[in-house]
Image (tube, rainbow, N blue to C red):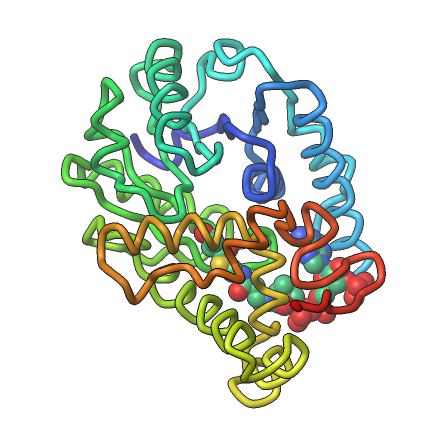
Length: 294
Ligand code: 3HC
């Protein structure tokens, strides 16, 4: 498919990444269908987009009127309606292989033959996911970073069966979104960014777990010495501790012990303190203070 033939994009999953990707596509002028399994979830995604567009407009970072962008987004729960006559499906459902497999089996049944499937998975195998569909050659990874509307990079990942046409169309689509695609030639666990980034977040947890530093000190050094735009714990709260933990567990199972999640991170996930999306993570996001770890 040529990028100029793409007009309609279906985004599956209205969570942190899904709503952000839908927003990016709508800003770029595409007709977007945002779909999740419940009305409330789609509505929450839409409200997040609305908030973000208004914030971008307030800071003079948006060329269009927020209402014009919002008008390009349809909200759907019915999967077959979301897929009708679509050109590209970008999937951002939870990082659970069984959920993704169920979704792709249904998507393959309803999507037009020409549609490309692009998964926003953080680390799972593109090849394994492509093999549950009817079109592994029209399947690749399209990995955005949080928050998608502010982050420039998109990893475009080739699976074992991905055709050159597919990868070129998705790279061109990333560019049409105003992003910079980086091609990841090997479908390896964590791809590039998460393979490098999640050990950093994990190591921050180990430093606190072993009593070497507190959260505020690690975050200060991350920002003022290492030069990260956010502290390691601030970033973990933004990415989601559940997501970071999942990536570490998966990469650990594939590449070994260097990625073993720190028990402090596991505790956070078990306490469902996922970060900004649950209001609490390493920080209490209402009060803006670090939550004591002992
Ligand atoms: N939409 C619109 N505005 C947003 C926003 C969004 N989604 N998210 C934050 N903002 C707003 C803030 O509310 C703030 O507004 P305020 O000043 O009125 O409070 C404003 O943006 C801050 O913007 P600035 O440019 O002034 O601030 P920064 O220079 O700090 O930039 C940032 C913000 C771009 C988010 C920067 O902090 C950053 O680059 N952080 C690192 C993010 C990162 O590394 N993400 C990747 C994580 S890994 C990942 O996602 C992969 C996954 O698979 C795990």
